[in-house]
Amino acid sequence: MYNALYARQSILKEDSISVESQIEYCQYEIHGEPFKTYIDRGYSGKNTNRPSFEEMLQDIETGKVTKVIVYKLDRISRSILDFANMMDKFQKHNVEFISSTEKFDTSTPIGRAMLNICIVFAQLERETIQKRVADAYYSRSKKGFYMGGRVPYGFRIEKTVVDGVNTSKYVPVPEESEQISLLYAMYADNNNSLGDVIRCLVKNNIENLRGGVWSTARISEMLRNPVYVRADADVYEFFKSQGANIINPVTDFIGVNACYLYKGSVSETRKQCDLTDKDIVLAPHEGIVSSKDWIKCRIRCLNNRQSTKTCKPKNSWLAGKVKCGNCGYALTIAKSNTKWGRYFVCSARLSTKKCKGVGKTIYADLLEQYMFNAIKKRLSGFSKLSANQNDIRSNPKLNDDKIRLSQVDNEIEQLLGKVNSANDVLIRYINEKIEKLDAERNRLREEINKLTYTSTEKDKKIIKNHVEKWEELSFADKQSVVDALIKIIYIADDKLDITWNI
Image (cartoon, rainbow, N blue to C red):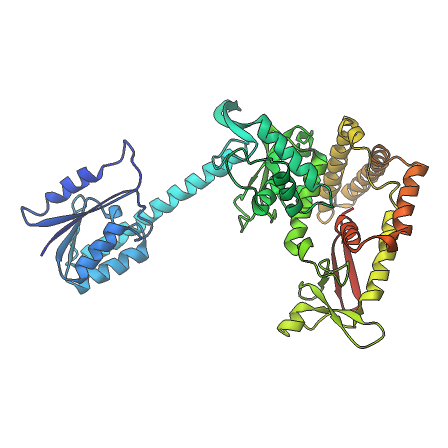
């Protein structure tokens, strides 16, 4: 039997006591008795998942250990629960516990009480350190500082100074950034799937310059990452619509700098597809991809999570877009012997019976005809399918109008929030101010429409041809049109709710 001398050091720092010094202190307590050392380097005291500590416990259970000696209490545990369990095991096997610098005697009730008090403060210290580190991280991230991590494809790291603080920023790598631009350009075309993009890269011998292999998961991650976008007012509004926490004001979104995406202190998930409560911060580096291409690719990637285009059944061009309004599950096609043939049914009700379904029978032919009419009506409000992108991207007036429009919307929201606590005089002032802001908002919308869309007879003919030739389109082309126009369709209890992409 022997004494167990335990030492732990989480990280190697000049101002922390080394494991060698800890063992030396512990040796003062054994007075020449036999001992064995147990050392854990690079392990935190927040839990007991440490190899040497677990080995020591095994030796205690086999009756080899008479005393456990540590330099200081927090070297063996900083968790109240772990410490209580450890002391129960020590007492069960008649093992004494000694802290060489704190002189605890576990054979007396007061000694055990003092140990419990000290472990409470040890855990408090650990949690305080964690909170301080987290606060420092969030504070630095909100200022656009580089916070480490894998360098995205298309960039390299370069030292810089932001607000007088030394940090780093991304700098485009010409060859890699050209490939990024190509990926966005290809996927912005609704006719190209992620598989089509990879096949095009392989066919043209376009290799991953970092030695990796192109994959749909990797490319999808690139197409969602805001580190590539030249963030303007449209990007600001997109993040706002997704529930993100935007750190910078809309006036900073001038179409030059890219964005950092952080989990933040509120969001409950690290998934990049979910922007709810995520922190969006303008980065010090310039973006690579236009806002329009980035938003289009981002929306397509989000839609792909709901329904993969290549996996859609060939029995309705609405498949994958239609969801049950009660449970959110997809509506799938079933067949009957009636004259209508195909009809939609809730997949959750079909498989688990946990959903009551959508109510009345939704016949596919009738829904397709209804949606075709809805598409025609939706398109009739646009003078052309897409604007001249070169004109839009080179027109700073358009982005300035969008920034001002967002500011006006925010001002109106703030004024409306003050109505409940306002007196009669303040309400009159609020009404007058809102009327002026609403007039400005309408004017800005008209200007934006004029700058974005040009009404010509040729453009009207393009729309008309698309509508008139619908029956001549292939099944895949109809799906592409639906993917471009419609985000999701919810149906339940005689209610139909369409969320459009335009």
